[in-house]
Image (tube, rainbow, N blue to C red; front, side, top):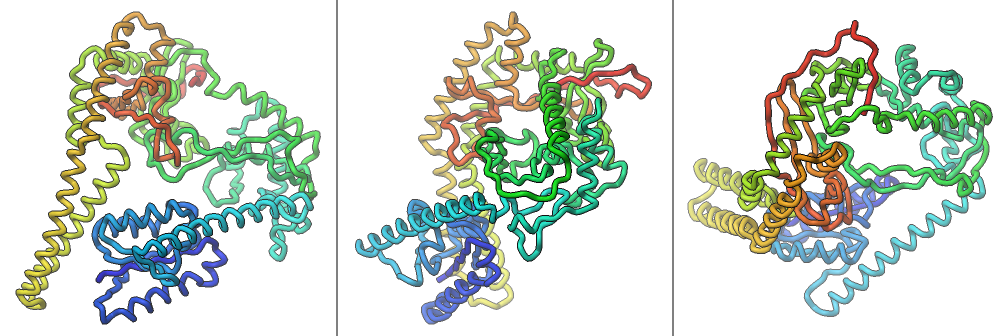
Length: 572
């Protein structure tokens, strides 16, 4: 019997005290005690999560364990207690039912479970108690932290702001905060320079880079958001406040071209009357100078490029450079020539690149016309949409959950194929007798057939076929409603349609890639695709989009305007 063991601890303190090693030691000893029953533990089947909360299922060790169970690599999973598997009873049931469907049993050392109703009732009670215990601990910690903040006994941050140092003996005590002379001088200089007329955040970053001022994180260049955070931090006036911001979950994806990565929320500023005064630290700037800087920041916010609409660009904020992957901004020269310019061609402080991007400027008028004409052709004829739906019927498009299941099945099939090859190699080397080889190979082939059957069922899922049929009808209805107004559409109407149907336009030298996204439901016509990425949300909206087509066209591009070009203004 192939056995896997799983251990988890929630905090780094438990990791340092090696409590997870105690869990894995008990589990390994239990496996060895059943060696007479053919229990075997492969080192690759030891799964652990150091410092991960049991309130979520997003854990790397647990994910690998679930993949191994789905791949039929494991017959039994050992865990010391149900709360080590998950703190939430619903999560426990999800995992246990998922493993039971894959033919894998779960066993808890402190209380071996069975199908007896009393044992199942006990498991439910223990899951509910673990969930209650976690909620109670979290609420007590929140109330205790709030009381310490109000009493001035706890700093609201675990890392000191730039220019300050915390006492190594009392790292969270406000009375142990001191200034770093070199960094504090940099902060004072930033406040003084920014108060001068015509100085921007980018100029401050370039100033620090030019003078070789090192960053706190060790990155080679300063960033404008970092400097803005310094200038907006009230700590430099000598007052430490808590609850100045509130966390907000991500509302849209960070990039249309880069990997998803982990989710990134936002810190939303809170009204000043809700702040909690924690204590006082050495001041770096005066309150009057700080208020002057805040007023300038608020004024300059209205001049941000996202608010600059002096010129009309159909693809504003939708163009990316295929050479370096950065976004392209719009630029006008002399008010007559308009281009989409890669951000990688800017100064290294702004582009965060050691060298400039070699891409050339793209004429905005030509690119706007090309994309709009291609969009009109897409919506004027039903064939492109029919081809997209046909690819969907063939499995080119699947919901993300089904895509993950299909990928898991394929990995399991590849793993079984490797096992068969190794088994055959062992037989040819006379390591295994013929009858043992035939028995093991027959077992592996049966598992391969089972996986192939699951993949076939996934491919011909009746519910998905019915869903795709509804998508095809919805797409055709949308096309018929939109196509009649394309010829006489105003710029605002074109822009609205482009934002809805074009996910990204990637320009690589003289090649243009248009990534379309078509709404599959009537209500989806009012929401952009970047706000519907399920990868970023625990509770996504119940709407789906279908990536329909990608068009590649030839486009004439002009060289970058030389240094002798007249002064230019940046838009978009």
